Length: 125
Image (cartoon, rainbow, N blue to C red; front, top):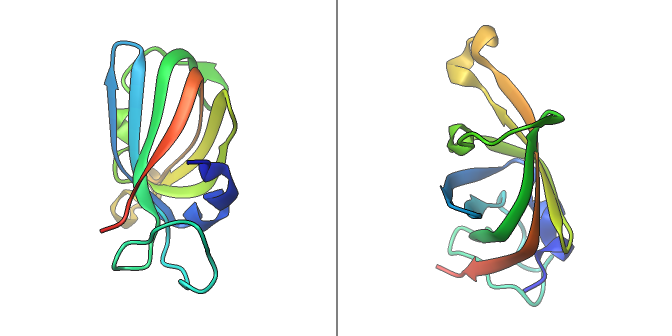
């Protein structure tokens, strides 16, 4: 499924879980709530959100805030999605964490993941 048509609905959505194994990454995410009349050709959850997994295989490069990263990116679990762009070979995800309300612990980052194959698996429940 081509998720690029629906990326704007992920503003104020969330990253649920990031899993990385070898040269593959799976990011489970959920959009913000939306009006079911607004979207067509995609199944929504009972909470009127788009929820699913964004798969990356044959990952070529990961950068965080413009810096090459070969470390775990799972620290972004439970972060809010501020912006999402997905193309054939890359995805840009801008994320934010309130950090428990403490200004010093707030975190904002831009992740760019480049891979040979990117695809979306939509959940409907």
